[in-house]
Amino acid sequence: MRLELTMKSELTLQALGVLTRSPDSLVSGPVIASTLSISADYLATVMRPLSRAGWVRASAGSNGGYRLSSDLSAHSVLDLIELVEGVVDRNSCMHGDCLRPVKEQCALHEPWTRAREALLKELDAESLAEVLDRQP
Image 1 (cartoon, one colour):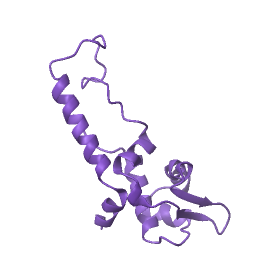
Image 2: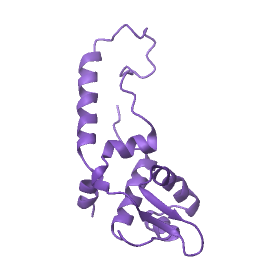
Image 3: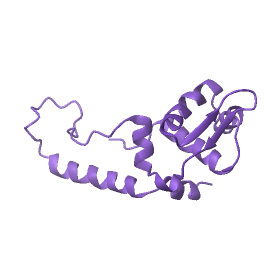
Image 4: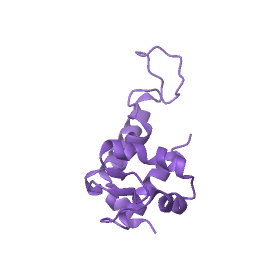
């Protein structure tokens, strides 16, 4: 079993880190893309959820770029994950593609549910600002 962020979530977090180092400045797309070692085209894909959610403001044109527009201490790690990956499924069986009827529970249902809720609680308790403050 693997519990890890996707590369897109990790890159989104790293992009926010770049922006937090210049909180009042517009940072160009090419600068962010270069810092993250990704293409400018992929950077647009990474930044889109942040822009749509209002966490980042994007400006087009030759003098364009990205700027933080939200206080990251108001957003949790779980908020970021759900913004990028979609809402966490809190009802699925730990077996993923389980063929059991929904009402029938496997032997590990209860501990899995408790573990998932504990993980989600921790991710929701950790603000993005706290995480980014620890980033080298």
